[in-house]
Amino acid sequence: MIRYLLRRLATAIVLVFLVLTLIFFVIRAVPGDPAQLLAPGGSTGEATEEAVEQTRELLGLNRPLLQQFTDFVGGVITGNLGTSFEGGRPVTVAVLERLPNSLELVAIASLLGILIGVVLGVVGTLRGRFADLVVTATTSFGISVPVYVVGVVLVYVFAIILGWLPAGGYAGWEDPARHIRQLLLPAVTLAIPFSATVARMTRASILETRTQDWVRTARSWGMGPREVFLRHVFRNALTPVVTSIGLQIGLMLGGTILVESVFSYPGLGRLMIEAVQDRDYPIVQGVVVIIAIIFIGLNIVVDLLYGVLDPRVRR
Amino acid sequence: MRTRYRRMLRAFGPLRWGAVVFLLVVIIASALAPLLAQDPLAQDYVNAGLPVGSPSHLLGTDGFGRDTLSRLLYGAGVELIIASGATAVAVTFGTTLGLLGGYFGGVVETLTMRLVIDVLLALPPVVLALLIVTIYGPGVVTLIVTMGVLFSPVFARTAYGQTLSVRRTEYVEAARAFGAGAPRILFGTVLPNISAPLVVQASVVIAASILLESGLSYLGLGVVPPAPSLGSMVADGQRFMATQPQLILIPSLFIVLVTLSFSLLGDTLRDWLDPRGKAARDV
Image 1 (cartoon, one colour):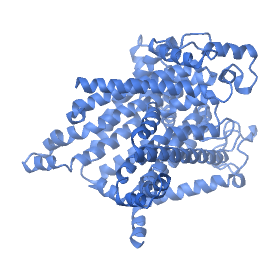
Image 2 (cartoon, helix red, strand yellow):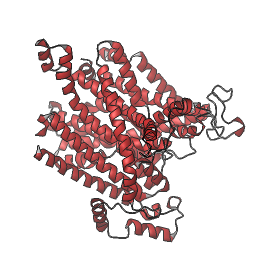
Image 3 (cartoon, rainbow over the protein chains, first blue to last red):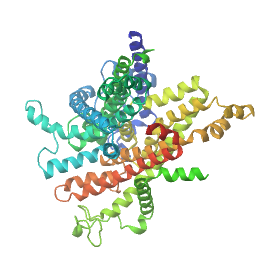
Image 4 (cartoon, rainbow over the protein chains, first blue to last red):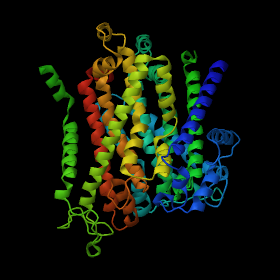
């Protein structure tokens, strides 16, 4: 198990390194001068000479390429993600300030989504065509609907028509009731497409597990359907679902960017969108790095969990 | 031939026919938008915020008096061009990488599948798309290329797995024995035999591209405003939500119908082209 863990960690570190390389070269592959492009007014081609020079200095583009690269990777390792174009704030500070809000949102949405998704998935395998039809229809819809549309429609129904919940914003933990009310709509929004995917995976996995020989054996021993389902079908069916849940939670980090915009929720996504609009490159880059690290970290956790659930994959 | 035709009919249910007809109507109507629709940018403050069913504006107008139906048609046209363009890029790029990686293995596999595909998969697509948009600015070409690269792993992985399973088959060996070169074997022999699952994936990826593109346009970072796009229609409509909910509901419903139709099309194609898969799922 230890060896498996170490091997997975090594792969992840290599992957993080490769992603950093990709990010590093995406900006430097710009035809012409990236400083010219990113300087204030650069997109319309009217950046002043000083502005371009200042941008070059800020991004370190005036140093040799190899040194830029080691500075960038070294910076990420030591937690220095550069400084924002606006006001010269350290990117790490700006990112860490918003990160907990996004993580809280994703965590709540994950719990909600797993709960709804697994229940829906199990219902979808019940006898009778009706349950199957309802679940298939709901999940197809859940997968096809863009997450921001879910958000906007939920705001319309629950904030505008019914007036039950706030349309957006954020409240700190000083007022727990308000905090939860503010979080409810964004979390449900994020959970809906996620739960549809989980439900589909769960359903498919249960249907497949049910045809296995050991299930037939258990049944032939005279085990009741409840016990067969709980002990032999459900547990085994969940193993592949766990993997997909990990990937989906990672993708939710992307989804929060849109959801936070719908609800003006002060998380990492909102920070990123504002930075994209202001063309504040260091902030955008910082957010991408953080999300990549979380995403890859999440994948290791899932792999390890998979190893615990199914000892066969450890080799 | 006859069984093939029957299999095709069986793969389409009434709902799936509905999806196909709907997509065809949308494609034709948006292609003919310059003839059918009004100017999607024409502002008319006298007729701002008209309700659905107004005589000269069938789906009403928005807060600037722009005709909703016209914006919907033009927006759908741009959306379909971007989504199909991105999918074409993704199919070409991804399939080539997958074929090369699967056929040659070794170093080539490391270069294609590990170095490119695994790295692309290490980030949610929206995040990488936003990074590119920050640098190059929004726009149709940027979107097509970026989303094409971002969605290529789906095709690369499918092509890779399929190539691995056919590269030792007799017919590939036979082609090699006849002296066919690697490009000829890959694109002439292997590709036609592994194309069915790739076609199925393509309709899934079109739907995913529409979701991603409309999301970026919702943020104002996709199609450049004021050009009409489905995502920005929802964003614009949000301000008038309390009094004119149709401004968000109409484009929202439209996007859902289009993506839903594409995924139904995907299911249909899978049942039609890959009946073994269906049998396995129906157990």
